[in-house]
Amino acid sequence: MYSFASKYQKALKQVTIENSDVHILSLIRDPETKDKGFTLMMDTYKERIYWHIRRLVVSHEDAEDILQETFINAYRFAGSFNGESRIYTWLYRIATNECIGLFRKNKNNRMEELTDKVVGRLTGNDLENSEEIQVRFQEAILKLPEKQRIVFNLRYYDDLSYEEISLIMNTSVSALKTNYHYAQEKIKQNMLNY
Amino acid sequence: MNSESEFQKVGKKMPYSVPEGFFDQITGRTLVKARQREKIHRKTVLMWRLAAVAASVAVLFALGYLVLSPLPEKNCEQTAQQMPSMLQPEVISQSPKVTAESQPKEDFVPVITDKEEITVSPESEEINDVLSALSNDELLQLAILYKSDIFLEETENNLQ
Image (cartoon, rainbow over all chains, first blue to last red; front, side, top):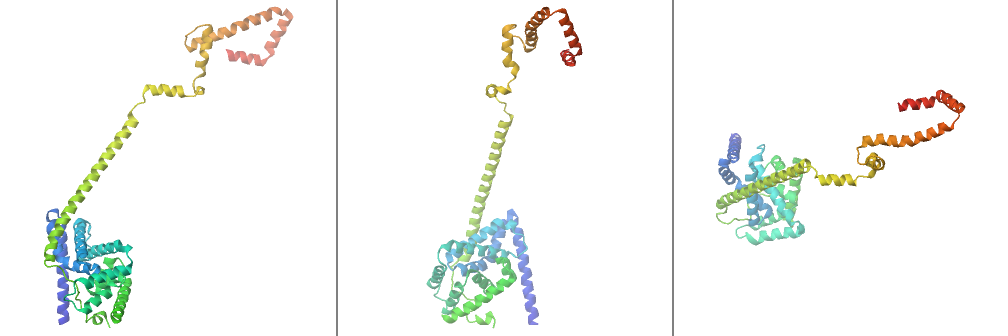
């Protein structure tokens, strides 16, 4: 009985989201209601997308810039969005590409230096109310290679399916599963060695 | 063991925080930026289109000028003078010689008739001299030769 109710609620939620996607797109594509559609889209997805970005870039300032860039791009290219995938998958894709762009900009720095810098930001700023284990966990994630880090975050924190992550990262499901498995192992190892 | 139980202790909490009111303000700020970006983009597109139209019109004018405008007369004369002498008609260069003797400053056709007279008259005088010097027998032999020689007949026909 519980299982049925849970499945029903999940399906209902899915239908609601899909309907809201259709509504948002119809508003954005009409020049007269474009701003209204944009506001609705941003209010629906900004927090999800922000936290995805923040987990990747750590700094709040960088996360804010990338969040804005993501939604500005969505505003500009909403007309070319074909609607085959869900809006949030599309937004995750734009945001992830923006983050990768930022990583490439910092390519001149050595990877270890970059990781140390990011971990330094993590331990330096927001730790007043957080537990030590959370910080260690984040440090372990930040030490992962770029692709594993993105897959792990999308799967672990955002609860996205491999199919959805495949659309976001343009990678096969099997490769994503492998990446996630390696990421888990490395994080465990890292936490044990702390 | 799955990841859920592995990382159960940690959960999904994160050691990050955001400034107060951040999520309330970010939508408005982003919308303003998006509008500005859209305006700039539209202006840039418009500028590029205008530049493209101006460039195509300029190219059309240049092509039209090159194709439709006639060459000036001076240029024609110059090119004619620059042509090699081999290409110029031979008759023009010969004509002054002929006209100097008989009819100066005449057209090409009458010049040719005069040329024939000039060239024929001394030859006929010579032939008459030669014929008067010949005896009757020799003249008779010449007449027989003339009738029997096919080549002389052909040339006569050609002349006619």
